[in-house]
Amino acid sequence: MKKPLTKTFKMEQAEIEIVTHTQKYKPYEIEKNIIEYLYKVPKRDLKGISKINIYDDCPDYFPENIAGSYYPRELKGKAEIDIYLYHALPYMLVDELLARFRNKLFLLLFGKVFIAYHLFHEIGYHKYTEIFPKLYKHKDKEESDKDAVDYSNKLLGNVFPFRMRYYNFFNILYKFLYRERIKKAEKIRSKPRALTPEYYDAQSETYLRLKEYEKAVIEFTKLIELNPNYPNAYFNRGFANANLGKRKEAVEDYTKAIDLNPDDPIVYYNRGISYHEMKEWREAIDDYTQAINLKHPNAVDIYRGRAYCYSETGDYQKSIKDFTNVINIDLANADAYYDRGYVYAMRGKYEEAINDLTKAINLNPKNVDAYKFRGTLYNKKGQHDKAIKDFTQAINLNTQYVETYFERGWCYYQKGDYENAINDYTSALNLNPDYTQVYYNLAGIYSILKEEEKACKFLKKAVSKGFSDFEHMKKDPDFINIKENECYREIIKSRAKSKIL
Image (cartoon, rainbow, N blue to C red; front, top):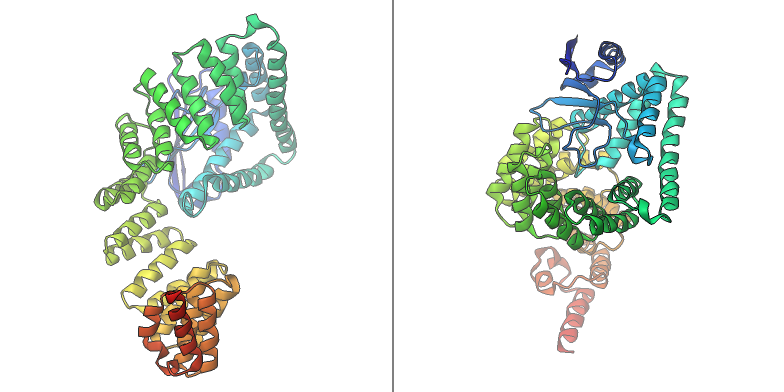
């Protein structure tokens, strides 16, 4: 085996080690292409990337074993990008030799575009999940991936303005080959001798990639009937069941896969996710722990998942410890700071929570939830001006967030700024006309202002929308000015009658 080719790429804000492991293709030419493409990337987007690996085939730990690229986030503030040159065509075609031939033809025609695409895509993914972290709570993976694709296509359009249209055509052809693979398999189905475990394995994998999970379950079941000791069949059927929302069936399949192969961290992780979504917190914690002990490559997500479970069981100390583990691995993870801040707040440690939320905001200045939550904590501490400033920033980022108007209105109310409180409560009602507490709060403010007619109007509205804490209403000092009002008395009287009935 040839020794990997290593070269260091240096630019103002980046020092990246390029390691070419390929044995089948031209390593020097690939290295040269990588360096050429890195110069096309904005300097700030390379920040935090430490290494780029180029391989022939995918590693065994890949859950789907697909070629392309992979971005491991478990490095301490650093990112590695892996690019795989063998593009998984065997899953599209019955004949693997033909698949390999087509893959070589593809690399011959579009190799440079393929490498550039995956390089730009992973840099884009790094940009939208690390430089501007929005994964999980604030931006899901699918949306971040879409941003990365758009980013990649934009850079590719600058580098390969004409060849891009052919590359896009080839990607469309890939999808066509998937469909052709299904059609060809259906013809084979009529020949019993051809229905081997290998056939069902390829067939079910194809359905899995097409996200046709019901069909994938059927094919994996047939594969299991032919080969009941094949752990991957149970794992993949569990994955398909999980995507169909059949968590119990997924757990059963993952358990069988573990019985057959107890050393696979990926199966424990997936079963842990299913337990997590079934709210079986203890079982999820056990599986996440086992996945960590077996060195699952995606430690960040596992620690985060286990931290959530600990939080749900009330074990806040262990939850904080796991979110700290995430931060130690990934120093730029804004969501981990947000989540740890949330758990600190649950324990009543508002100062520590505010510090973490501040770090989350520094890493992601567009994090609406962090501004809102920090504003809530400032309000609890009686720091109304700071709270109003945070709520205002949250509103600037998202004008449709009704709770933020409500909370800022409450801050203004506590400061005695009734005009601004009324404006915010009115905005909240414009977004949610059924917000009972807003009607009640407005009634209180108008009572303080001695506008009895408006106070009664909003109090009646609150009751009609479901307000039922009349004992609190009787003791509420805001209504002193209208307690002798006939409207107020009627509301209390009607409540007394309803209790008798």
